[in-house]
Length: 492
Image (cartoon, rainbow, N blue to C red; front, side):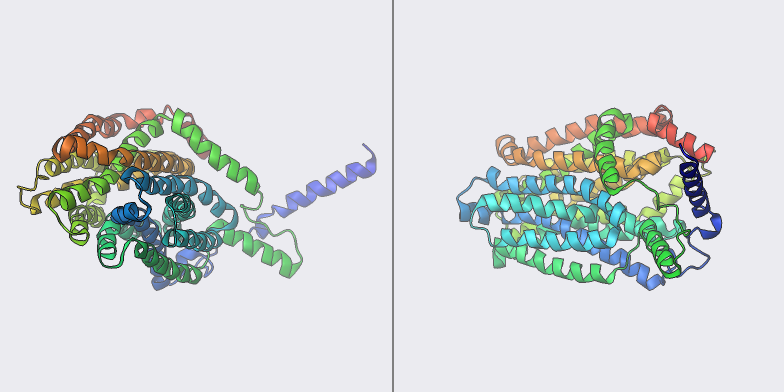
């Protein structure tokens, strides 16, 4: 190497060192108005409400579909199983989209991905409303699910972006009040729409909600701190002409690398991380049984009790109230979690502390399922199967909220990948099992079909109890978690 080349290398190295001078680091200052966590309280509440509304619309659309099954069967002369494929394709789209689009939000920021995905979600709802054949419905439902997935996967991240640590649990509870009840609100609202306006209007109403959601997303500013700091860095470089300004997110992996990592890592964790293997299985089956209810309830209330679609939709109120109880009881549950012994490495209760709520939920779910199964007969007063939804909905709410807390608390840095893998399994099972639900309930009857599902849920009860007792030992044997702890300890 010539002396000139050596000098050039030396200059480049000096520039790199200079560019990392702490005096030129771009970060948040005290009471920095650019920091989303210092925005006015009313606006941060608006961000939480807007993202919650957007997510609720997507989730409602998933289950609203089941209210119009009869109308679509008549319109396209298709069997119930074929029409139910629209539920399956939508859930598959949600699972894949939540994994892919959440990665893009890390590259380009949350706001542009939100706006684009909400717009495309609405565009692909339109062909369903205008459909001339069942094939166009199945394809459009998949694509709308794909673009709707970003609201589900990035919503909690947006809430975390704008809330302080001490209020984050409360903010997430407020966000989840609509999203957790979305699956239940869908058939309740859809039943009235189908009865009085027809199945196509289910999609038109969702389109109206999507339009409102799009307006709200335009009013929500960017909340993702890395994207905001990168923007501020570029502005300083441009305004001052000094390229020494930098932020710690400047030299992250390229967009393609981030996308590749975020697609490969969740798949690897699904198969090779013991925590993910068992929790994905458990949550996936619980979610699938929940979606089987959207097949079972119309059979029980419309076919056996001869209720109208609108009244049959109200049968889900028990599940909705139970889920709402799980959400609003968060402060009380949080107090019980904080009574657990603190982890010396963090000073906070270990992730397993949240699993006690999952243990409670795992018992309540089969209780509700058994209750519903043996009060489903038309000779039994209608209030009893509806009340069965209270323990069932409460149990589901506790499982979904606190199992998510456990997975996120266990993997921290890799939490997004763990949850992406969980979404794929959850929506996959949730989409497949309901296809057999109608035949199962018609063949076995609501009593024995419900009993079989309850027995499966009873068999799975030991999973959360085992992790509550021994989860800390499993975490310490996970290569990903151990390496993460090592990096944190060494300051890497």
